[in-house]
Length: 536
Ligand code: GLC
Image (tube, rainbow, N blue to C red; front, side, top):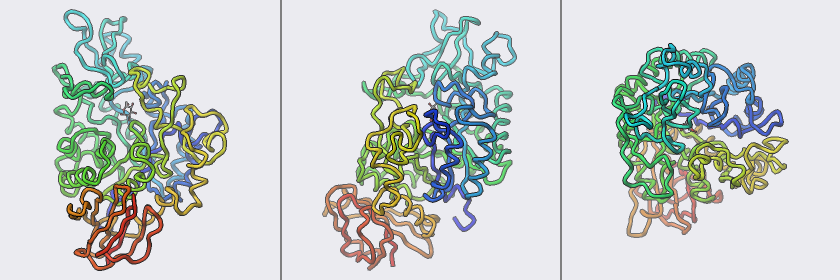
Protein backbone atom coordinates (compact mmCIF):
# COMPACT_ATOMS: atom_id res chain seq x y z
CA UNK A 1 0.00 0.00 0.00
CA UNK A 2 1.21 3.47 -0.79
CA UNK A 3 0.06 7.00 -0.10
CA UNK A 4 -2.78 6.34 -2.47
CA UNK A 5 -4.47 4.04 0.07
CA UNK A 6 -8.19 4.56 0.24
CA UNK A 7 -9.67 5.83 3.48
CA UNK A 8 -11.27 2.49 4.40
CA UNK A 9 -7.94 0.68 4.03
CA UNK A 10 -6.29 2.67 6.79
CA UNK A 11 -9.08 4.28 8.81
CA UNK A 12 -10.75 3.18 12.04
CA UNK A 13 -14.46 2.36 11.88
CA UNK A 14 -16.54 3.07 15.00
CA UNK A 15 -19.84 1.21 15.35
CA UNK A 16 -22.76 3.12 16.84
CA UNK A 17 -25.86 1.31 18.02
CA UNK A 18 -28.19 4.29 17.59
CA UNK A 19 -30.67 3.39 20.33
CA UNK A 20 -27.84 3.45 22.86
CA UNK A 21 -25.44 6.24 21.92
CA UNK A 22 -27.07 9.58 22.75
CA UNK A 23 -30.66 10.61 23.33
CA UNK A 24 -31.53 14.21 22.36
CA UNK A 25 -35.28 14.32 23.10
CA UNK A 26 -35.58 12.71 26.52
CA UNK A 27 -37.46 9.59 25.43
CA UNK A 28 -34.73 7.27 26.74
CA UNK A 29 -33.80 6.15 23.22
CA UNK A 30 -30.79 7.41 21.29
CA UNK A 31 -31.32 9.27 18.02
CA UNK A 32 -29.63 11.00 15.09
CA UNK A 33 -29.44 14.51 16.59
CA UNK A 34 -27.87 12.78 19.62
CA UNK A 35 -25.19 11.22 17.45
CA UNK A 36 -24.64 14.57 15.77
CA UNK A 37 -24.04 16.21 19.14
CA UNK A 38 -21.28 13.68 19.83
CA UNK A 39 -19.35 14.09 16.59
CA UNK A 40 -16.88 16.41 18.28
CA UNK A 41 -16.07 13.59 20.71
CA UNK A 42 -15.55 11.11 17.87
CA UNK A 43 -13.30 13.53 16.06
CA UNK A 44 -11.32 14.10 19.26
CA UNK A 45 -11.06 10.34 19.77
CA UNK A 46 -9.58 10.00 16.30
CA UNK A 47 -11.85 7.60 14.45
CA UNK A 48 -12.22 7.93 10.68
CA UNK A 49 -15.71 6.58 10.08
CA UNK A 50 -18.89 5.77 11.93
CA UNK A 51 -21.12 2.83 11.05
CA UNK A 52 -24.62 3.32 12.39
CA UNK A 53 -26.78 0.21 12.93
CA UNK A 54 -30.17 0.47 11.13
CA UNK A 55 -32.01 3.79 11.35
CA UNK A 56 -34.93 3.03 8.99
CA UNK A 57 -38.63 2.96 9.88
CA UNK A 58 -39.18 -0.23 11.82
CA UNK A 59 -41.64 -1.85 14.21
CA UNK A 60 -38.47 -2.72 16.19
CA UNK A 61 -39.17 -6.44 16.50
CA UNK A 62 -35.38 -6.78 16.10
CA UNK A 63 -34.53 -3.17 16.97
CA UNK A 64 -34.24 -1.91 13.42
CA UNK A 65 -33.01 -5.07 11.70
CA UNK A 66 -36.66 -5.42 10.64
CA UNK A 67 -36.94 -2.67 8.04
CA UNK A 68 -40.39 -1.39 7.03
CA UNK A 69 -39.07 1.17 4.53
CA UNK A 70 -35.52 1.20 3.17
CA UNK A 71 -35.53 4.85 2.11
CA UNK A 72 -36.62 6.80 5.15
CA UNK A 73 -35.71 7.36 8.80
CA UNK A 74 -37.47 5.87 11.81
CA UNK A 75 -39.27 8.70 13.67
CA UNK A 76 -37.79 7.54 17.01
CA UNK A 77 -34.38 8.32 15.51
CA UNK A 78 -35.37 11.54 13.74
CA UNK A 79 -36.04 12.56 10.14
CA UNK A 80 -34.30 12.39 6.80
CA UNK A 81 -33.39 16.03 7.33
CA UNK A 82 -31.74 15.09 10.66
CA UNK A 83 -29.79 12.46 8.80
CA UNK A 84 -28.66 14.93 6.14
CA UNK A 85 -27.47 17.31 8.85
CA UNK A 86 -25.59 14.54 10.59
CA UNK A 87 -23.94 13.52 7.33
CA UNK A 88 -22.96 17.08 6.45
CA UNK A 89 -21.50 17.73 9.92
CA UNK A 90 -19.63 14.46 9.90
CA UNK A 91 -18.13 15.19 6.49
CA UNK A 92 -17.13 18.62 7.65
CA UNK A 93 -15.15 16.95 10.41
CA UNK A 94 -13.65 14.48 7.96
CA UNK A 95 -15.64 11.60 9.38
CA UNK A 96 -17.18 9.11 6.96
CA UNK A 97 -20.65 7.73 7.58
CA UNK A 98 -21.64 4.14 6.89
CA UNK A 99 -25.17 2.82 7.17
CA UNK A 100 -26.37 -0.71 7.78
CA UNK A 101 -28.11 -2.39 4.85
CA UNK A 102 -30.41 -5.30 5.71
CA UNK A 103 -31.05 -7.18 2.46
CA UNK A 104 -31.85 -10.70 3.65
CA UNK A 105 -35.25 -9.81 5.09
CA UNK A 106 -37.59 -6.90 5.56
CA UNK A 107 -40.17 -6.32 8.25
CA UNK A 108 -43.49 -8.08 7.81
CA UNK A 109 -44.85 -4.52 7.93
CA UNK A 110 -42.97 -3.51 4.78
CA UNK A 111 -45.44 -2.64 1.99
CA UNK A 112 -43.87 -5.36 -0.17
CA UNK A 113 -44.66 -8.11 2.33
CA UNK A 114 -48.15 -6.80 2.99
CA UNK A 115 -48.79 -7.17 -0.73
CA UNK A 116 -46.96 -10.47 -0.97
CA UNK A 117 -49.01 -12.14 1.73
CA UNK A 118 -52.33 -10.76 0.41
CA UNK A 119 -52.83 -13.49 -2.23
CA UNK A 120 -50.98 -16.22 -4.08
CA UNK A 121 -51.36 -14.31 -7.31
CA UNK A 122 -50.21 -10.91 -6.09
CA UNK A 123 -47.32 -9.62 -8.27
CA UNK A 124 -45.16 -9.37 -5.12
CA UNK A 125 -45.94 -12.94 -4.02
CA UNK A 126 -42.59 -14.17 -5.32
CA UNK A 127 -40.67 -11.33 -3.66
CA UNK A 128 -40.60 -13.44 -0.50
CA UNK A 129 -40.11 -17.17 0.01
CA UNK A 130 -43.43 -19.02 0.14
CA UNK A 131 -43.72 -22.81 0.20
CA UNK A 132 -46.46 -25.36 0.59
CA UNK A 133 -46.65 -27.37 3.80
CA UNK A 134 -44.73 -30.66 3.87
CA UNK A 135 -46.67 -33.59 2.31
CA UNK A 136 -47.98 -34.70 5.71
CA UNK A 137 -48.41 -31.18 7.02
CA UNK A 138 -46.08 -28.96 9.02
CA UNK A 139 -43.28 -26.72 7.81
CA UNK A 140 -41.65 -27.42 4.42
CA UNK A 141 -38.36 -28.53 6.02
CA UNK A 142 -36.43 -28.48 9.31
CA UNK A 143 -34.72 -25.10 8.99
CA UNK A 144 -34.52 -23.31 12.32
CA UNK A 145 -34.74 -19.62 13.07
CA UNK A 146 -31.72 -17.98 14.73
CA UNK A 147 -34.14 -16.81 17.38
CA UNK A 148 -35.61 -20.24 18.12
CA UNK A 149 -38.21 -22.53 16.61
CA UNK A 150 -38.96 -23.24 12.96
CA UNK A 151 -37.79 -20.74 10.34
CA UNK A 152 -41.21 -21.15 8.69
CA UNK A 153 -44.47 -19.49 9.71
CA UNK A 154 -47.82 -20.61 8.32
CA UNK A 155 -50.03 -17.91 6.87
CA UNK A 156 -53.58 -19.23 7.00
CA UNK A 157 -54.91 -16.66 4.54
CA UNK A 158 -53.11 -18.26 1.60
CA UNK A 159 -52.32 -21.68 3.09
CA UNK A 160 -48.55 -21.46 2.66
CA UNK A 161 -45.51 -20.99 4.87
CA UNK A 162 -43.09 -18.06 4.54
CA UNK A 163 -39.42 -18.29 5.44
CA UNK A 164 -37.75 -16.19 8.14
CA UNK A 165 -34.23 -17.11 9.20
CA UNK A 166 -34.74 -14.69 12.09
CA UNK A 167 -37.93 -13.45 13.77
CA UNK A 168 -41.35 -14.26 12.24
CA UNK A 169 -41.60 -10.49 11.79
CA UNK A 170 -38.53 -10.64 9.50
CA UNK A 171 -39.65 -12.50 6.33
CA UNK A 172 -36.74 -13.42 4.00
CA UNK A 173 -36.71 -11.71 0.63
CA UNK A 174 -36.36 -13.83 -2.50
CA UNK A 175 -33.07 -12.68 -4.02
CA UNK A 176 -33.51 -15.06 -6.96
CA UNK A 177 -36.26 -12.76 -8.22
CA UNK A 178 -34.67 -10.10 -10.49
CA UNK A 179 -37.23 -7.48 -9.44
CA UNK A 180 -36.20 -7.86 -5.80
CA UNK A 181 -32.58 -7.43 -6.77
CA UNK A 182 -33.33 -4.32 -8.81
CA UNK A 183 -35.47 -2.79 -6.06
CA UNK A 184 -32.84 -3.46 -3.41
CA UNK A 185 -30.01 -2.09 -5.56
CA UNK A 186 -32.13 1.05 -6.00
CA UNK A 187 -32.35 1.30 -2.20
CA UNK A 188 -28.56 1.18 -1.97
CA UNK A 189 -28.28 3.95 -4.59
CA UNK A 190 -30.78 6.08 -2.69
CA UNK A 191 -28.31 6.45 0.19
CA UNK A 192 -25.13 6.51 -1.89
CA UNK A 193 -26.69 9.37 -3.90
CA UNK A 194 -27.28 11.17 -0.61
CA UNK A 195 -23.57 10.98 0.14
CA UNK A 196 -23.32 7.97 2.43
CA UNK A 197 -19.80 6.55 2.34
CA UNK A 198 -20.76 2.91 2.30
CA UNK A 199 -22.63 0.14 4.03
CA UNK A 200 -22.14 -2.62 6.49
CA UNK A 201 -24.34 -5.36 5.04
CA UNK A 202 -26.30 -7.61 7.33
CA UNK A 203 -26.01 -11.44 7.05
CA UNK A 204 -24.75 -11.01 3.51
CA UNK A 205 -23.73 -14.68 3.20
CA UNK A 206 -27.28 -15.93 3.62
CA UNK A 207 -29.05 -14.22 0.72
CA UNK A 208 -29.44 -17.44 -1.28
CA UNK A 209 -30.99 -20.62 0.10
CA UNK A 210 -30.76 -24.18 -1.23
CA UNK A 211 -32.91 -24.51 -4.33
CA UNK A 212 -33.87 -28.06 -3.33
CA UNK A 213 -34.92 -27.00 0.18
CA UNK A 214 -32.92 -29.80 1.82
CA UNK A 215 -32.92 -30.22 5.62
CA UNK A 216 -29.98 -28.80 7.55
CA UNK A 217 -28.16 -31.53 9.53
CA UNK A 218 -27.94 -31.26 13.31
CA UNK A 219 -24.65 -29.99 14.68
CA UNK A 220 -22.98 -33.03 16.28
CA UNK A 221 -20.89 -30.76 18.53
CA UNK A 222 -23.84 -28.86 19.97
CA UNK A 223 -23.84 -28.79 23.76
CA UNK A 224 -26.77 -27.66 25.89
CA UNK A 225 -26.10 -24.04 26.79
CA UNK A 226 -24.42 -23.25 23.47
CA UNK A 227 -26.19 -20.49 21.53
CA UNK A 228 -29.45 -21.80 20.11
CA UNK A 229 -28.50 -20.85 16.56
CA UNK A 230 -25.61 -23.34 16.58
CA UNK A 231 -27.96 -26.36 16.90
CA UNK A 232 -27.96 -26.95 13.15
CA UNK A 233 -25.17 -26.90 10.59
CA UNK A 234 -26.62 -24.30 8.28
CA UNK A 235 -25.19 -25.79 5.13
CA UNK A 236 -28.34 -25.19 3.07
CA UNK A 237 -29.17 -21.72 4.29
CA UNK A 238 -25.82 -19.99 3.99
CA UNK A 239 -22.87 -19.61 1.61
CA UNK A 240 -24.84 -21.16 -1.27
CA UNK A 241 -23.73 -21.52 -4.89
CA UNK A 242 -24.28 -18.29 -6.82
CA UNK A 243 -23.80 -15.98 -3.82
CA UNK A 244 -20.48 -14.66 -5.12
CA UNK A 245 -21.88 -13.69 -8.50
CA UNK A 246 -24.77 -11.94 -6.74
CA UNK A 247 -22.46 -9.99 -4.45
CA UNK A 248 -20.24 -9.03 -7.38
CA UNK A 249 -23.32 -7.47 -8.95
CA UNK A 250 -24.02 -5.66 -5.70
CA UNK A 251 -20.42 -4.45 -5.58
CA UNK A 252 -20.83 -3.02 -9.08
CA UNK A 253 -23.48 -0.71 -7.61
CA UNK A 254 -20.92 0.62 -5.12
CA UNK A 255 -18.41 1.01 -7.94
CA UNK A 256 -20.74 3.41 -9.72
CA UNK A 257 -19.56 5.88 -7.05
CA UNK A 258 -16.16 7.02 -5.78
CA UNK A 259 -14.53 5.51 -2.71
CA UNK A 260 -17.62 3.91 -1.19
CA UNK A 261 -17.04 0.85 0.94
CA UNK A 262 -18.91 -2.42 1.11
CA UNK A 263 -18.43 -4.29 4.39
CA UNK A 264 -20.03 -7.69 4.83
CA UNK A 265 -21.21 -9.40 7.99
CA UNK A 266 -19.97 -12.96 7.42
CA UNK A 267 -19.42 -15.60 10.09
CA UNK A 268 -17.51 -18.31 8.20
CA UNK A 269 -14.18 -20.16 8.54
CA UNK A 270 -11.28 -18.41 6.82
CA UNK A 271 -11.23 -20.58 3.68
CA UNK A 272 -14.86 -19.73 2.87
CA UNK A 273 -14.61 -16.17 4.18
CA UNK A 274 -11.75 -15.22 1.87
CA UNK A 275 -13.82 -16.03 -1.21
CA UNK A 276 -16.01 -13.06 -0.37
CA UNK A 277 -13.21 -10.73 -1.44
CA UNK A 278 -14.00 -11.99 -4.95
CA UNK A 279 -11.80 -13.61 -7.59
CA UNK A 280 -10.27 -10.23 -8.52
CA UNK A 281 -11.10 -8.30 -5.34
CA UNK A 282 -14.36 -7.41 -7.05
CA UNK A 283 -16.73 -8.46 -4.29
CA UNK A 284 -16.96 -7.35 -0.64
CA UNK A 285 -14.21 -4.81 0.18
CA UNK A 286 -14.06 -5.93 3.78
CA UNK A 287 -15.60 -9.27 4.72
CA UNK A 288 -15.72 -8.85 8.49
CA UNK A 289 -13.08 -10.95 10.24
CA UNK A 290 -14.76 -12.22 13.41
CA UNK A 291 -11.99 -14.58 14.52
CA UNK A 292 -11.27 -12.52 17.64
CA UNK A 293 -14.99 -12.15 18.31
CA UNK A 294 -15.45 -15.92 18.18
CA UNK A 295 -12.27 -16.69 20.09
CA UNK A 296 -12.83 -18.18 23.55
CA UNK A 297 -9.19 -18.70 24.52
CA UNK A 298 -7.47 -15.44 25.26
CA UNK A 299 -3.87 -16.64 25.35
CA UNK A 300 -0.77 -15.62 23.44
CA UNK A 301 -0.55 -18.89 21.45
CA UNK A 302 -4.26 -18.82 20.53
CA UNK A 303 -4.23 -15.21 19.37
CA UNK A 304 -0.91 -15.63 17.53
CA UNK A 305 -2.43 -18.57 15.67
CA UNK A 306 -5.54 -16.56 14.74
CA UNK A 307 -3.50 -13.69 13.34
CA UNK A 308 -0.97 -15.85 11.53
CA UNK A 309 -3.55 -18.06 9.89
CA UNK A 310 -5.63 -15.05 8.83
CA UNK A 311 -2.59 -13.35 7.32
CA UNK A 312 -1.67 -16.59 5.54
CA UNK A 313 -5.18 -17.11 4.14
CA UNK A 314 -5.68 -13.54 2.94
CA UNK A 315 -5.70 -13.08 -0.85
CA UNK A 316 -2.89 -10.95 -2.22
CA UNK A 317 -3.64 -7.21 -2.06
CA UNK A 318 -6.80 -7.79 -0.01
CA UNK A 319 -7.28 -5.38 2.91
CA UNK A 320 -7.43 -7.21 6.24
CA UNK A 321 -9.76 -6.13 9.04
CA UNK A 322 -10.22 -6.85 12.74
CA UNK A 323 -13.14 -6.70 15.15
CA UNK A 324 -13.29 -7.32 18.92
CA UNK A 325 -17.02 -7.03 19.51
CA UNK A 326 -20.35 -5.84 18.18
CA UNK A 327 -24.02 -5.49 19.11
CA UNK A 328 -24.55 -9.27 18.91
CA UNK A 329 -21.55 -10.69 20.74
CA UNK A 330 -19.93 -10.44 24.19
CA UNK A 331 -18.09 -7.26 25.07
CA UNK A 332 -14.32 -7.75 25.03
CA UNK A 333 -13.79 -6.17 28.48
CA UNK A 334 -16.26 -8.65 29.99
CA UNK A 335 -14.68 -11.53 28.14
CA UNK A 336 -11.03 -10.92 28.98
CA UNK A 337 -11.15 -8.55 31.96
CA UNK A 338 -10.07 -4.92 32.26
CA UNK A 339 -6.30 -5.44 32.15
CA UNK A 340 -6.37 -7.66 29.07
CA UNK A 341 -8.92 -5.38 27.39
CA UNK A 342 -6.04 -2.91 27.07
CA UNK A 343 -3.92 -5.58 25.40
CA UNK A 344 -6.84 -6.28 23.06
CA UNK A 345 -7.08 -2.60 22.16
CA UNK A 346 -3.36 -2.38 21.41
CA UNK A 347 -3.71 -5.50 19.25
CA UNK A 348 -6.79 -4.23 17.39
CA UNK A 349 -5.20 -0.90 16.57
CA UNK A 350 -1.80 -2.21 15.49
CA UNK A 351 -2.61 -5.25 13.37
CA UNK A 352 -2.58 -4.84 9.62
CA UNK A 353 -5.81 -3.54 8.11
CA UNK A 354 -9.01 -1.81 9.12
CA UNK A 355 -10.10 -1.99 12.78
CA UNK A 356 -13.73 -1.70 13.85
CA UNK A 357 -14.35 -0.43 17.36
CA UNK A 358 -17.75 -1.04 19.01
CA UNK A 359 -19.06 1.96 20.94
CA UNK A 360 -17.87 1.90 24.55
CA UNK A 361 -14.87 -0.34 23.89
CA UNK A 362 -12.72 2.79 24.09
CA UNK A 363 -13.66 3.21 27.76
CA UNK A 364 -13.57 -0.51 28.54
CA UNK A 365 -17.35 -0.76 28.88
CA UNK A 366 -18.53 -4.03 30.37
CA UNK A 367 -21.82 -5.84 29.81
CA UNK A 368 -24.93 -4.82 31.70
CA UNK A 369 -26.90 -7.05 34.07
CA UNK A 370 -30.39 -7.18 32.63
CA UNK A 371 -33.11 -8.15 35.11
CA UNK A 372 -35.71 -10.52 33.60
CA UNK A 373 -38.39 -7.82 33.39
CA UNK A 374 -36.08 -5.59 31.33
CA UNK A 375 -35.20 -8.18 28.66
CA UNK A 376 -36.29 -6.97 25.22
CA UNK A 377 -34.05 -8.81 22.73
CA UNK A 378 -36.17 -11.20 20.62
CA UNK A 379 -33.37 -13.76 20.67
CA UNK A 380 -33.41 -13.82 24.48
CA UNK A 381 -37.20 -13.77 24.70
CA UNK A 382 -37.65 -16.65 22.26
CA UNK A 383 -34.77 -18.92 23.24
CA UNK A 384 -34.69 -18.20 26.97
CA UNK A 385 -30.94 -17.61 26.57
CA UNK A 386 -29.03 -14.54 27.62
CA UNK A 387 -29.37 -12.73 24.31
CA UNK A 388 -27.84 -9.42 23.32
CA UNK A 389 -29.30 -6.80 25.64
CA UNK A 390 -26.24 -6.92 27.95
CA UNK A 391 -23.98 -5.64 25.15
CA UNK A 392 -26.35 -2.84 24.08
CA UNK A 393 -26.59 -0.77 27.27
CA UNK A 394 -26.35 3.04 26.99
CA UNK A 395 -23.04 4.72 26.28
CA UNK A 396 -21.47 6.02 29.47
CA UNK A 397 -20.64 9.69 29.12
CA UNK A 398 -20.58 10.89 32.75
CA UNK A 399 -21.71 10.02 36.26
CA UNK A 400 -25.13 11.73 36.15
CA UNK A 401 -28.19 9.52 36.84
CA UNK A 402 -28.51 8.28 33.25
CA UNK A 403 -24.82 8.55 32.43
CA UNK A 404 -25.29 11.61 30.23
CA UNK A 405 -27.03 9.38 27.71
CA UNK A 406 -30.44 10.82 28.45
CA UNK A 407 -32.19 12.87 31.11
CA UNK A 408 -34.76 10.07 31.33
CA UNK A 409 -34.57 6.36 32.17
CA UNK A 410 -33.03 4.57 29.22
CA UNK A 411 -34.59 1.74 27.19
CA UNK A 412 -32.07 -0.63 28.75
CA UNK A 413 -30.50 -0.37 32.21
CA UNK A 414 -27.01 1.10 32.51
CA UNK A 415 -24.10 -1.23 33.06
CA UNK A 416 -22.67 -1.38 36.53
CA UNK A 417 -19.78 0.94 37.34
CA UNK A 418 -20.76 3.64 34.87
CA UNK A 419 -20.20 6.33 37.51
CA UNK A 420 -16.47 5.74 37.31
CA UNK A 421 -16.17 4.09 33.91
CA UNK A 422 -17.21 6.96 31.66
CA UNK A 423 -15.88 9.47 29.17
CA UNK A 424 -15.85 12.45 31.56
CA UNK A 425 -13.75 10.63 34.16
CA UNK A 426 -11.38 9.01 31.68
CA UNK A 427 -10.85 11.99 29.43
CA UNK A 428 -8.46 13.74 31.76
CA UNK A 429 -6.81 10.66 33.20
CA UNK A 430 -3.66 9.88 31.21
CA UNK A 431 -3.71 6.27 32.44
CA UNK A 432 -7.28 5.56 31.38
CA UNK A 433 -8.48 3.18 28.68
CA UNK A 434 -9.82 6.18 26.79
CA UNK A 435 -6.43 7.92 26.83
CA UNK A 436 -4.77 4.69 25.70
CA UNK A 437 -7.24 4.32 22.83
CA UNK A 438 -6.84 7.90 21.74
CA UNK A 439 -3.06 7.67 21.89
CA UNK A 440 -3.13 4.55 19.72
CA UNK A 441 -5.40 6.25 17.19
CA UNK A 442 -2.92 9.15 17.02
CA UNK A 443 0.01 6.75 16.60
CA UNK A 444 -1.76 5.02 13.73
CA UNK A 445 -1.65 8.35 11.92
CA UNK A 446 1.92 9.26 12.78
CA UNK A 447 3.71 5.91 12.36
CA UNK A 448 3.54 4.95 8.70
CA UNK A 449 4.54 1.34 9.42
CA UNK A 450 1.25 0.88 11.28
CA UNK A 451 -0.72 2.03 8.26
CA UNK A 452 1.09 0.42 5.39
CA UNK A 453 3.79 -1.83 6.83
CA UNK A 454 3.84 -5.60 6.48
CA UNK A 455 3.18 -8.00 9.35
CA UNK A 456 5.56 -10.60 10.71
CA UNK A 457 5.19 -12.63 13.90
CA UNK A 458 8.35 -12.84 16.00
CA UNK A 459 9.39 -16.31 17.16
CA UNK A 460 9.92 -16.48 20.87
CA UNK A 461 11.74 -18.97 23.00
CA UNK A 462 9.56 -21.57 24.67
CA UNK A 463 12.38 -22.52 27.09
CA UNK A 464 11.82 -19.42 29.19
CA UNK A 465 8.02 -19.48 28.83
CA UNK A 466 7.85 -16.45 26.53
CA UNK A 467 6.10 -18.33 23.76
CA UNK A 468 3.20 -19.19 26.02
CA UNK A 469 2.95 -15.73 27.61
CA UNK A 470 3.80 -13.22 24.91
CA UNK A 471 2.70 -12.46 21.36
CA UNK A 472 5.17 -10.24 19.50
CA UNK A 473 5.03 -8.96 15.96
CA UNK A 474 6.70 -6.50 13.68
CA UNK A 475 5.01 -3.96 11.43
CA UNK A 476 7.55 -2.66 8.96
CA UNK A 477 7.87 -0.69 5.74
CA UNK A 478 11.01 0.59 4.00
CA UNK A 479 11.35 3.50 6.42
CA UNK A 480 10.23 2.22 9.75
CA UNK A 481 9.98 -0.84 11.98
CA UNK A 482 7.46 -0.97 14.78
CA UNK A 483 7.48 -3.81 17.28
CA UNK A 484 4.39 -4.76 19.29
CA UNK A 485 4.91 -6.99 22.32
CA UNK A 486 1.89 -8.18 24.30
CA UNK A 487 2.02 -9.91 27.68
CA UNK A 488 -1.12 -12.04 27.98
CA UNK A 489 -0.35 -13.04 31.56
CA UNK A 490 -0.33 -11.37 34.95
CA UNK A 491 3.31 -12.22 35.57
CA UNK A 492 6.27 -10.12 34.40
CA UNK A 493 8.14 -11.34 31.33
CA UNK A 494 11.67 -10.77 30.21
CA UNK A 495 12.62 -11.14 26.56
CA UNK A 496 15.75 -11.03 24.51
CA UNK A 497 14.83 -9.52 21.15
CA UNK A 498 18.31 -8.25 20.34
CA UNK A 499 18.19 -10.14 17.04
CA UNK A 500 15.86 -7.38 15.82
CA UNK A 501 17.75 -4.31 17.05
CA UNK A 502 19.81 -3.06 19.92
CA UNK A 503 17.50 -0.30 21.08
CA UNK A 504 14.00 0.96 20.56
CA UNK A 505 11.81 3.87 21.60
CA UNK A 506 8.58 3.14 23.43
CA UNK A 507 5.67 5.08 21.93
CA UNK A 508 2.98 3.48 24.01
CA UNK A 509 2.60 1.15 26.97
CA UNK A 510 -0.72 -0.25 28.17
CA UNK A 511 0.71 0.09 31.67
CA UNK A 512 1.40 3.76 30.86
CA UNK A 513 4.60 3.81 32.86
CA UNK A 514 7.21 2.60 30.43
CA UNK A 515 8.69 5.22 28.15
CA UNK A 516 11.90 6.31 26.50
CA UNK A 517 14.58 4.03 25.12
CA UNK A 518 14.61 0.32 25.88
CA UNK A 519 17.34 -2.26 25.30
CA UNK A 520 15.99 -5.19 23.37
CA UNK A 521 18.43 -7.67 24.86
CA UNK A 522 16.64 -7.22 28.18
CA UNK A 523 13.11 -6.17 27.44
CA UNK A 524 10.93 -6.33 30.53
CA UNK A 525 7.15 -6.46 30.36
CA UNK A 526 5.09 -5.80 33.46
CA UNK A 527 2.07 -8.04 34.18
CA UNK A 528 -0.55 -7.51 31.44
CA UNK A 529 1.67 -5.01 29.71
CA UNK A 530 1.77 -4.38 26.00
CA UNK A 531 4.39 -2.17 24.36
CA UNK A 532 4.61 -0.43 21.05
CA UNK A 533 8.25 0.20 20.23
CA UNK A 534 9.83 1.87 17.24
CA UNK A 535 13.08 0.08 16.50
CA UNK A 536 16.25 2.04 15.92
C1 GLC B 1 -27.35 -9.65 12.04
C2 GLC B 1 -27.42 -8.51 13.00
C3 GLC B 1 -28.31 -8.89 14.15
C4 GLC B 1 -29.69 -9.18 13.61
C5 GLC B 1 -29.64 -10.21 12.51
C6 GLC B 1 -30.91 -10.22 11.72
O1 GLC B 1 -26.70 -10.74 12.57
O2 GLC B 1 -26.14 -8.12 13.40
O3 GLC B 1 -28.36 -7.91 15.14
O4 GLC B 1 -30.52 -9.63 14.64
O5 GLC B 1 -28.62 -9.98 11.58
O6 GLC B 1 -31.01 -9.04 10.95
